[in-house]
Image 1 (cartoon, helix red, strand yellow):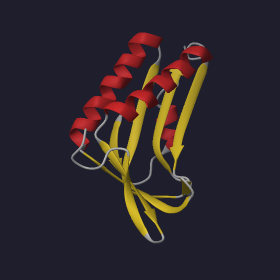
Image 2 (image 1 turned 45 degrees about the vertical axis):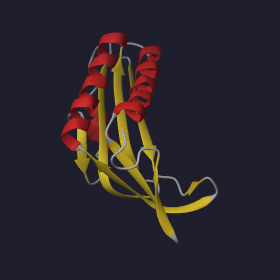
Image 3 (image 1 turned 180 degrees about the vertical axis):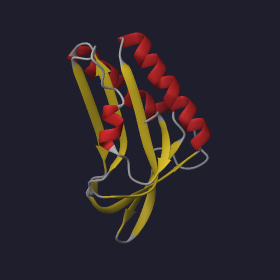
Image 4 (image 1 turned 90 degrees about the horizontal axis):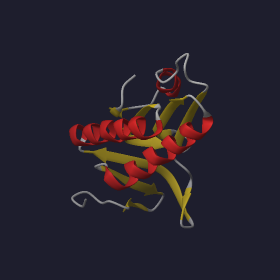
Length: 139
């Protein structure tokens, strides 16, 4: 499993297994999953769009930064398309010598992803939808 943007469900186990190693005493997996409410509105699904080539390059850069800074192995996989409630839209896996590095690297990865990566989210409600955070065409 490699860092990148994919269509369809994420194989969480494959992402996690890709960072395992005999030198890693800590393996941490973060799943960002679709929840059923946002600001008091019932959400029935999410939909993601991405500039996949650019997003994959940026995700790889974020992983490289985390690896260099925290001495870990990191992988980020984000999906596009429709995401049902409770399904993961992003999975970050980190293998580290110790838990502190794993936690720091995982938080670094998700925070950087949220501010730097060209992925857009639309929330779908029973009575319509709305683009959240970064609508298409905005950085």
